[in-house]
Image (cartoon, rainbow, N blue to C red; front, top):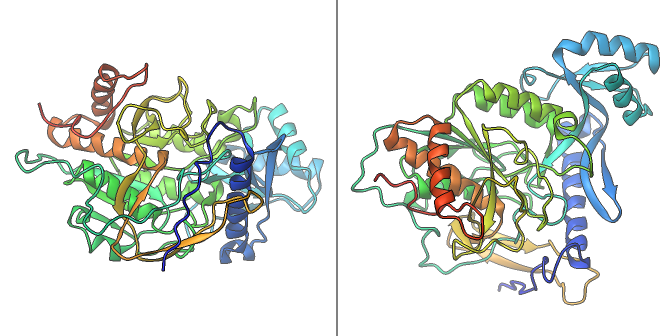
Amino acid sequence: MSNQPNLPYWWEPSVPNGRQRGRLRVQFDRIVEGLQSAPENVDRNVVIREVATDEDVDYLYRDEVILVRDRDVERVLGILRDTIGDGARVEEPVDREPQRGVTTIALPAGADLDAVISDLRDREIDASKDLVLHICPSASACPATEPVLVSQDRGPVPAVADWSPRPTDRKVKVAVIDTDFHQSVVEQHDWLSNVSGQPGGPQADGHYRGHGTFVGGVVATMAPDAEVRVWPALLTSGGQISSDLGPILDQVLQTGPDIISLSAGTTLAPGEDPARELLGLEVFREYLAKTDTLLVCAAGNDAQDVGFYPAGLPHPEIVAVGALDDDDATAAGYSNYGSWVDVWARGTDVVNGYPNGRYDYEDIDPDTPGDQPGHVVFTNWLASWSGTSFATPLVAGLVAARMAWSHEKPREAWAALHQIAVAHAVNGRPVLKRGDADRP
C-alpha cells in the first residue's frame, strides 16, 4: 500500500526558510555518506567537507586534495616540498584515464588546504579544491520534487514530437551525463527505443536511481530519431567529486557528441570566481570550446538569483536552462533565475520512464511538524518529476530535433532556437516548448 506525502512545496512562501534548510540538510548528508562510502572512495580515504555561509551550505569539496593544470605539476610539487614538506603526490583517477589538462595532487594529512591554494595562486599557478558536483544544489534539490506515481494510461509529458511526416536527414548524437541507466525501463516504452547506456551505474540502487534514464527519456520525446546515450557519472546518492567526474566528461567529449545534457553542478560561496574555483570544469570548457559540441546545463533549483555552475559560466558553448510550470509560461517557483539564465522550458510535472519498485520519500525536514516519511510503489514504469533537471534535456532535445533537418551545427541550431525563444518571451524570459524545433 502506498503512502505518498502531500506536503507544501519547500519554496513557499519564500526561500530561505526552515523547511528548505531542513530538506537541504537531509540531502547533503545523503550525498556525503554516498561519496564517502563508495568502495573506491573508502580505499582512498575520501573525506568530504562543506563550505557554508550563515546557515546555508555553499558547496562540498574533498579534503586534502587540490587540482592543478598538468603543465604546473612539477613546479607545484617542488613548491609543496619547500612549504609543507614531503608527502604530496600525484593521484590517479579510479579505473579510467585522467582528465586532459588536469592533475589531482593529494596533500599530506593535516595540510592547510586553503593556505596551499592561496600560496599557489599568489605564484600565478591555477589551483582549486576538488569540488563536488551534484543533482542537489545548495538551497533545495534537483529535482525540485521527489518522483510521483502517475496513472497507468499516461504517456510522456510533454508528448513525443510528431516526426512521422518529417523524415530526418541526419542522426544527431546526444550524451546525457547523469546517474544510472535502466535498460528495463527502456524496454517498456517505444519512445525510448533510441536511448542506450551502460546498465546500472555507481550505487545504482540509491535514492536518485532512475534520474539518468528519466532525463534521457525527456531528450527522446523531443528528438525521437536522435541517438541518446546515458553516461552514469553521478552516484545515485546525488553527487560526484570533480576529479572523478572530469575524466568522464573528457571521455564523453572525445566520442564526438553533438550535444551534452548535464543536470548537475554546484554553487559557490559569495564572491568566489567560478573560473578559479572550478578548475576541472574550466579546463573541460576550454576543450569543449575547440569542438562543435553544445553543453546544455540546468540552472539549478535554489529559487534565487544565484549562480549554479557550469550553467552560469558565460560562454557561447554553454546554455543555462531555467524551469517553467506546466503552462510553458510561468517561471517555476523552485527555479533559479537571473540574466545569466539563457532560456526557459517546462520542468514541472514532467512524465517519463522510471524504474518500478518501492521509493521512500526522504527529502523532508524531520523537525518540521507534518513532515512524515512516506513511500510509493512504482508499477507502471512511469513517474512525474519536477526540476530544472528536466527542463534541461527538453532544450537539448529541441536542439537535436532542429539539427536533424536543418544540417546546422549544434551552436548554430541553438542560436536559431534562441531567436525563437526570444520571440516567445514571457515577462522577459526567452521560452522554448514542444514544436519549436519543427521543420518550417
